[in-house]
Every structure is written in structure tokens, then in C-alpha cells.
Image (tube, rainbow, N blue to C red; front, top):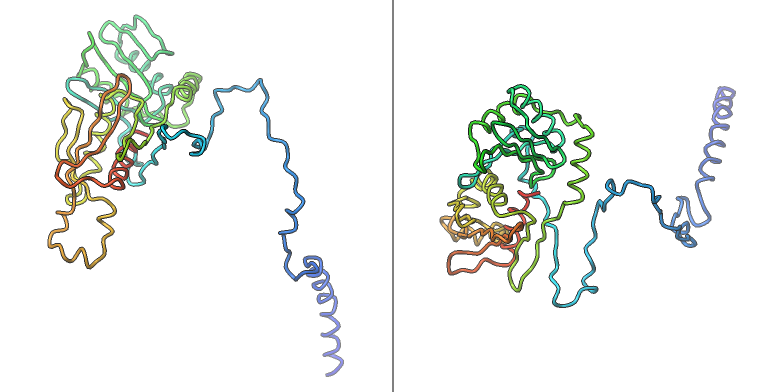
Length: 331
């Protein structure tokens, strides 16, 4: 019996020695586990990475732009911040590939694809419909036919395009309806890239200006690098979808003539009130404030503001929160 036990003990001795050697290699004098703090004591900075001068500069830009430090600004300067895109709003997977926008008697299409991909579809549409193409300028996004003039440009939202079909400067409803049906039936795949698409993308990188959320006095506003017609139409489209919850956020009226909207909005600071405070109100919806969203035209640019219509002033936090949400529709 003892001989059997001795054999089993001797059998495990090599494994025990191997384990001890392995664990000893992972330890330092100060303890069993490796202390990596000492590895960074004498570290020297390496020289910065330098890209070759022969690179294509259109392919490079700051992935995470860093705002200028406040200490480097004068007191009269205005701090500008790019508003974040709201998580609750955006193009969902089942959103339409082609959507319509309008303001007054103007109408156009917004396509969920970059202009390069849409341009190739526009050319195919002209061939299928036997349109007499008299002039085609892809770099400008203009196609002249005997029936109508097609104009293509980057949309306000990243990765989308705007298409107009006009005659004599007036929108052609029948043309836009036919084009919308064709594009919906022949949606371009995300992988359908081309040289034209790459050119359009590079152009957008060069011309892309961020929205700027800035403080003016005791109020907030958003500087938008697009004209008021396009901004109002885009905001109206998404307000109709997003502001549909009575007592929390609701679209009450839309006025294209004055580029403004009337909404009911319940700010987060009101929604987060304590349970005791909420119980004191029989109708929580009365906490929502009536707010006017105004798009002020400034040539090819616009300024978005939010102001309460009643006697109670919209707080700075609520004002910024609402402007961040609405301006997120434009990115």
C-alpha cells in the first residue's frame, strides 16, 4: 500500500516543480503579482508621427476635434460647441430610402445615400425615362433635360443627398413623384462606391462646417451653416416624428412663412423632480412649457433659438437641452 502512495507522490513532483518555476518567473521582489508602475518611471517621449507631403490631404481631417482652451480666448469671444446627436432621434434601419421635404411651394427629395451614388441613379433614371439630356455637369450636380432640370447636392444630414426637379425655377411634383418611385425601387447598396462618389465625399469634407452651439448673454443659440428654407423643412420633418408625446414633447404648430414652430416641452429638470413633488400635481402635463423655436435667416446661414411664450422664462438648462435635441436633426 505504501509503495503505491510513494509512486503517486513521485508522479506529481515534476508538475509541482514546473509550476513553481513558472510562478517564480511572474513575481518580483516586491510581491507575487507584477507591478507595472515601475515600467513607466524612465519612459521617454517618442517623436510625433509625421505624414508624408505626398499624401492626399482630402482624405485626412481631425476625427475628434479639440475645442480651443478657454484660457486662450479673450473674454469677448463666444464659446462654440458641436451639439451631440440625440440617441432617440435619427435614421432607423426601417426608415424610407427616399423622403420628401417641402416649404411653401418648394419641394425636393432627401435620399439616404451620398451624392455620388445618387448621381449614377439619376443618370439611369434619365435613360429609362428617355429624357433628352442636353447638358450634364456631375461635379456641380446639374443635369439639364428638355423636360426639367435636376439638381443634386449634399443634404444637411451626413451621408444623405437632396435632389430637386425644376422647370423655370418651380418644383415639378410629377417629376419628383416619378423619381421618388424609381429611387425607392432601385435603392443603392452601401457598397456601390464609384469614382464620382469618392469625389463627392471629398467635396463634402472640404465644405463641411459643424453646427455651433453657443451662448449669447444669458441665452443659448445654434449657428447652422445652411439657409433657412432647408433648415426649417428638415426640422419640421423630424419634429413631426419626434414631438408626438403629449405632456412631454409635442408639436403644436408649424409656420413656414416665419420659419418658426410652436412646441410643448417638458425639460429633464422637470421630469426628474422628486416623487413627492410630482404627487402634488394632479396633471403632470401642466409642467410642460410652450416654447417657440425660431429659425432666423442669415443669408446662406441660419440661427436657431428657443424661447418660452408664457410669463415663465425657459431656464438655461432647458433651453440648451431643447436646442441640442432639435439641432441633432441636422447632423
